[in-house]
Length: 193
Image (cartoon, rainbow, N blue to C red):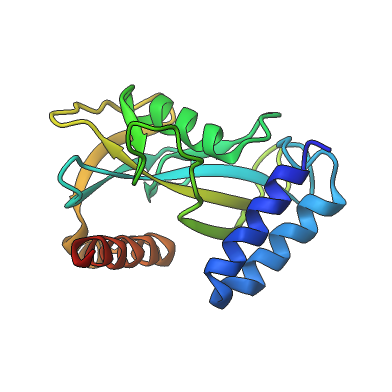
């Protein structure tokens, strides 16, 4: 079953983050009930993947000023049939930022299985030719190489590095602030080890 790896991944995520059980339950229900959950045509929602991209010093995050939504967001997008959310997130981050050399946070020289950093279910408003629906977004933490130079794709007006400490004053949405908080906690924990 092509959905089984994601269902197992969501269970592992819930064990590590029991406080997010309601979101995990919603995502698992969608994935379990929809054989086409990796297609953008699946309604009332479908699986997407995105990345919270950190600078090499882990002090800033790279956001794109999305054309459709006219706001700053993390890079991400539709699965379009891909069943591995980590691959979706990496592909979308590379396409939307022009950064080819990205690595999953915590991945050393060995190929470790990427672990979701955050989950989010959010509504997408109706647009011409597209009904309102939900994105069940599986998010990963990626790190750019030193000196990485980003560029905006056709899907964005701009791409820009934002210091993590300044995100709240930038008026970004709550899920970006949540990911910034998770990043700070993760970095603080890693510094203690």
